[in-house]
Structures are given as C-alpha cells and as structure tokens.
Image 1 (cartoon, rainbow, N blue to C red):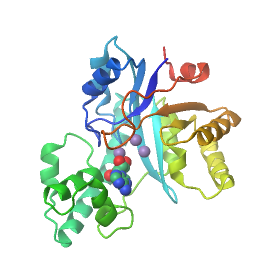
Image 2: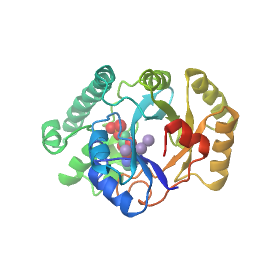
Image 3: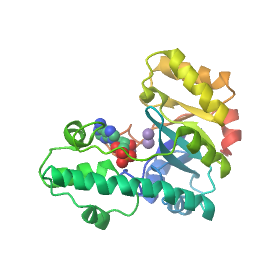
Image 4: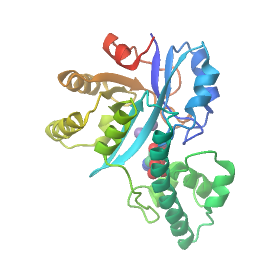
Length: 271
Ligand code: AMP
Ligand code: MN
Ligand code: MN
Ligand code: MN
C-alpha cells in the first residue's frame, strides 16, 4: 500500500492545487494521501471531492505551534467542516494575519516594496513567509527563497516577526476535541541536543494526548526512522510518513510513499 500523509497545496505554501495533488499522486499509484496545509483546512474539501474513488484523502492540517521552539502538529481526520472547529481555526488565522501585517511594515521600514494587499490579490488562503519571500524575489531584492530567509525573514533575521501561536498542548487538544489524531511532524527538525531531551519532551506530548509520530519523514535517515519508530511503539503511538511536498525545490519529489502498519491503518481509517 502506498501512502503519502504530508502534502501542501496552494491553500498554504505548496505550488499544486489540491486537485493537482490528487491527479499527480493518482498517476503515481498512491492509495491514500493527506493534504496538510499550514494552519488551514480550506483545501481539504477540494481534494476530497476531486478524488472520488481514485484514492483516499485524509482530511488534515499542519498546525504551527511554539513552546521553546517551533513544533508542527499534524492533525489527521479532524472534523474539517465543523463550524466550531472552523471558528477556532479562524482564531489561529488571525494570529498569522497580525504577524503578517507587522512583517510587511517591517520590510517596508527596511526599504522593501512589500505590501500585504498585493499578496492577498494572488493568494487564496494562508499567507506565510514563503509569500513574503516571493515578493522579495519579484522586487529584485533577492534571487531566491533561500536568500530571502537567510538574509531577511528567517528566524531572528532583521525583518522576522514572531507570531502568536498555539502551544503544542493546545494544538494537540484542539485536534482531539474535533475527532482528530494529533501527530508530531518531522521530529528531527526539533533539534534537541540529546535523545533524553527529546524523550522528556515526547512524554509531555503523550500526556497531552499525542497519537503519533511522523517517523518516516523524507529527511530522516534509516537510524532516525528506527529510533522515532521505537519511541512511537514505546508509547503506543501510530507511525506516519510523508514527503512534505511543497514544490520541486521544497520537500521530496512526489511518488515517494510509505506502507502503513495495520495499527496505523486502523487508527486513521485507511482502507
Ligand atoms: P510561516 O509559517 O509563515 O512562519 O512560514 C514558515 C514556512 O516557511 C515553513 O513551513 C517553510 O515552508 C518555510 N521556511 C521556513 N524557514 C525556511 C528557510 N530557511 N528556507 C526556506 N523556507 C523556509
Ligand atoms: Mn511550508
Ligand atoms: Mn512542518
Ligand atoms: Mn509541512
């Protein structure tokens, strides 16, 4: 069975629409995919409708959270049409709106011709730093996204503005309240210095109700995959995997997949 449970669409910072993701993954023989846009479920319905019987789409979201570091929580099978859930997601979107307005003002302070209105004209849904990077490229200030992050909008660079975020516990509980399964995304990117530090952190997430770990992430080597899988098994968590495909330059190419265990299939309802 071929699954890719971590994809971004144009509703956040991916380059393909949800429909294109479905078509491209279907062509590659994928059985099940998850559209996990940053802090929005607005693209889910498009993928679900377009997929029909071609492949299964798991409704998902990738929540950006902050504790003492940036932590991403994947929420699988959240009730993406529930009006209370959408209200809560709206609050999360407002945190981002505030940050974006401050960031645009800061970029202008530094002399860059960056306006939020212009981004909003071309962008349907969640606006993030990748969109600011694109504006900086368009104005000729930088050559590419990497340069934009390295020089200006990466963490703690001159035009960086920290966003109000859910805590990781709040994100886990938000998923649980709406029937979702919260999974710790790409744990390697947390950059804990020791395994013990990671394991202590994981304990707090498990207590909050964490359901899984994205152990089979594209940038994890075989040892890391085994280590995170063992940690998941130790706590009775599911093991998931995905490409984190955004574009040809960001994430791993489409077509890479993982084969979920019976337990993961049962919990996520993968047919
Ligand atoms: P935001 O959630 O708006 O703060 O933007 C975060 C997104 O920007 C991440 O999910 C990545 O897709 C992208 N990003 C963060 N850091 C970098 C970087 N150093 N280079 C390129 N893209 C990045
Ligand atoms: Mn992204
Ligand atoms: Mn992420
Ligand atoms: Mn992602």
